[in-house]
Amino acid sequence: MELVDLTLIWAFIIGFGVIMYVLMDGFDLGVGILFPFAPSEEDRDTMMNSVAPVWDGNETWLVLGGAGLLGAFPLVYSILLPALYIGVFLMLSGLIFRGIAFEFRFKARTSRYLWNWAFAGGSTLAAFAQGIVVGTYIQGYETANGVFVGGALDWLTPFTVLTGLGLLAGYALLGSTWLIMKTEGRLQEWAYRISLPLLATVLVVFGIISVWTPFIDDMVRDRWFSNLSIIWVLPALTLLCAFQIFRSVRHRFEGMPFVATMGLFITAYLGLIVSRWPYLVPPDYTLWDAASAYNSQLFLLLGLLVVIPFVLVYTAWTYWVFRGKVRAGEGYH
Image 1 (tube, one colour):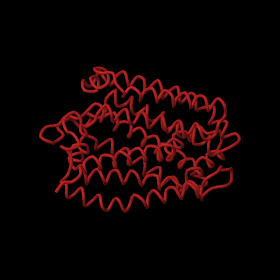
Image 2 (tube, rainbow, N blue to C red):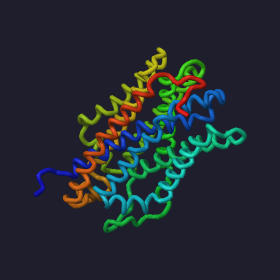
Image 3 (tube, helix red, strand yellow):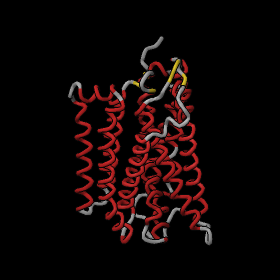
Image 4 (cartoon, one colour):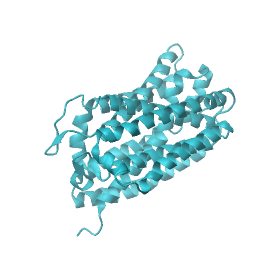
């Protein structure tokens, strides 16, 4: 007997896993995106050391979200993967190169510059591919009878390229504010200098995306403009977070820029959910259309309720152990 709607519970769990991944892996992808522009090789060492203790644990949320999506909403996989084969392959390739660079760069001498580019290139490629996925989700998929019937390059449009660039800039902003919080001296000053131009870039790109989106989807336009309602508090909160980033960087606060940038991502993410709710595979399939059987959801949920507390405790403990500033010559490795 179905006593509760497990589909909604699973939607919350997967949504939580996605935003946790975006926030926690976003800043170390951002550090990689900024890597080629660092003032010196010593600063690159410090940048990598600032994320070395936590980067692999952060990606746990990607695995959790992907596995939960497969178990709870199998229709998504049958449509999303054929639609995004190339984009997903590029993202995973970037994450692989980036992960390998973490291990080899610290030990390399003559080839260190190659691992620098592997780390920066892998981070940039993974972030851009994730933005492509977001853009494809916004613009929708061409489906028929639960099957993707579009072309292999439907994911590559001017709109998805723009969302890819927007996420690149957003992750770079997360990375720069992370460095403000975790470093000091010359590297911290450099992070302060680049944060406001990155914020301006993020706001411009997000603004263009916000104006463009209603023109590619009637449902989104109706959701936001046919009945002006409480959902408009989300753009207001986004602008408030942006103002707080500007203010805290100008006043040389250390922790607040990073916290406000996370708030910026959360409000933008909630805006995306509100725009598409309850469609999991827009424009045709809702959460309930894509959901697996109730018993399957319940079986997976019982296991996940055991795993998630361990992941949360481990994550919190790791960040607590490696709290504080990362200084030149010090590091996890």
